[in-house]
Length: 398
Image (cartoon, helix red, strand yellow):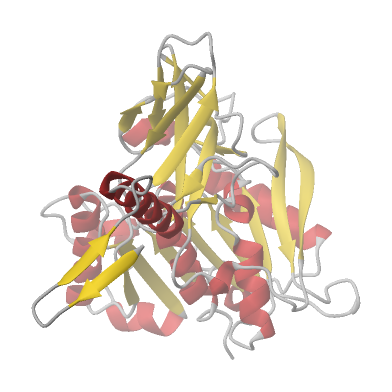
């Protein structure tokens, strides 16, 4: 290649085999490689080990790829449905819109049937086993495993006389629990949401990592955390289908007080006075928390509702709820150590308005409480992880 220069122009003479078209092709190739490098995805942390897809792109779009040569139609249902496209080798692929940070359930819809993605780990949510994807959060270090002392999540099976069935609770014991057999601990009863179970908080919620890190940093008191399935039916009572989701038939609040708490106090080294007992829950679990604690104020000193609180009907007087427990604000404030309410700023409008309205009603009634809005999060685990992080740092303080 030669070039001639003068005062007015530069002339480039290309050898015949190296045409302008070839140069343009090379430039396009370089640009394509650059764009691909900038948009390369990484496998989701929720994938089965060794699986490359789903992949999360830098802008939080997600690429799904599934081999199903005999399928007629595949879709990904991740907050909205995305049609997948099949190539000649039988792989189906789709790229979603940007997905919000945090954990999300999703399904692979194969010829109209919702199933789990074989490349994803499965989680109990949506009332069934489902796939899940965790979109990295910029502030996610607080629920990541670190080189700190770690507690344990133990599975406890027990027979319930009330439900006439075997039940299971997951119980977190803090680091050092087994090393000091004389030490006793306060207890947090922590509940999941609708369509989930006792595996939700330790699996999707990362509660053990949150507590391990908080305790190691000296920001939380070492505590036992009990997670039970929030559904319970007494077979001797008539089945009621009234109320939200048929919850009037659910005797879980009664089960917790009469059976779970005595079982935990007998099986673990707990501090059994009300000042060392807390309860919190997300969504349905938040409503259950208020239902349980507000009717058993002699047993609980801390209350937490994440995206769920007391049920306050429009126009109702909050001072009339729970047999007038909030009628005397001064007396209540002296009795309770903490009332905590939280919501995500991007949650469904009706839910956001309901929780915020409940907070405002507490304010108006003079009830001391902590109110937290999780910025930019939906009705999902990122809202609740943040809420637990804050709530756990506030309870059991001397």
